[in-house]
Image (cartoon, rainbow, N blue to C red):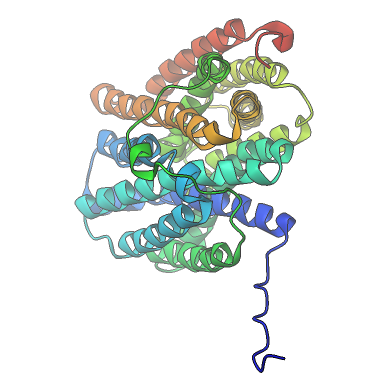
Length: 399
């Protein structure tokens, strides 16, 4: 009999706990992306930059996410989900420190770029990991958690700005602590995907997918663009719009993004059993109606109409996004999941970043935020109509 006792098997995190951990990481990353929104007014008053630069700060994040998704979107299909997530979380913690210490516009932009790169690396791995654990619930979580995170970051930063000292540091410290704890959880989590060769080759942007996945991406694109264009506007200029319309505080201004994102998450959850096609069509219709309602509030500066229409637009955003993601996720085989979801996020972040920068330019040029918001609303309504027309009724083709 050996004198040495056999080594104890390492404890494994239950699948339910791993699923919740992955979903919570998406919330944290998206909360970090929206946390600067209520702080833009503070940064702008201290550093005296234009509305265009305000949206550039937001837009560079979206473009950095896009680059990371294109380069690292398939990496977790080869090296596993955990290594990608650990590296992304570590980078995100460093980014929170950069935000907390930012003393100039250049430092803020640098932090946003690094934040976008780490978020882009993480999102594909998280989304694929959720699908590895539970394909059905994973598709739902991939749609619900981004708006939940966006809402959480906006309201957390808004509260800290309104009621606490050092708001431009405190929110990032809180998020850094949460990320460190989540990183420890990932280190203890069992890998959900078997690594395979080809990691270096996977870093080359890849846009070739199976015909079914390509069709799902093409049909889902209009809904993704319409939904995230609206989200991008409120994430960059929403608080300023609310303050311009109603003369409110920073906290109330930040609630615009919170209300939109919360209604998106709630509507997504309530309609989780609908087909992808039904969700996309319903979401595009509701998004158009809600956007029209928001525009109707502008001439009268009506807070009642604005706050009644905003959650309707948010519900449309959530349903349209979930419909497109569910279509893509459920038609992607395991070895294409991270890559396909990454392309969906590429489309989303392009739609979130570029129109917001254009809106900021128009505000600076025209000097009229409300007029620009109305023009942006027309753009979203047209895109929603395209998404509605592009989605087959009943989803017989791909859904």
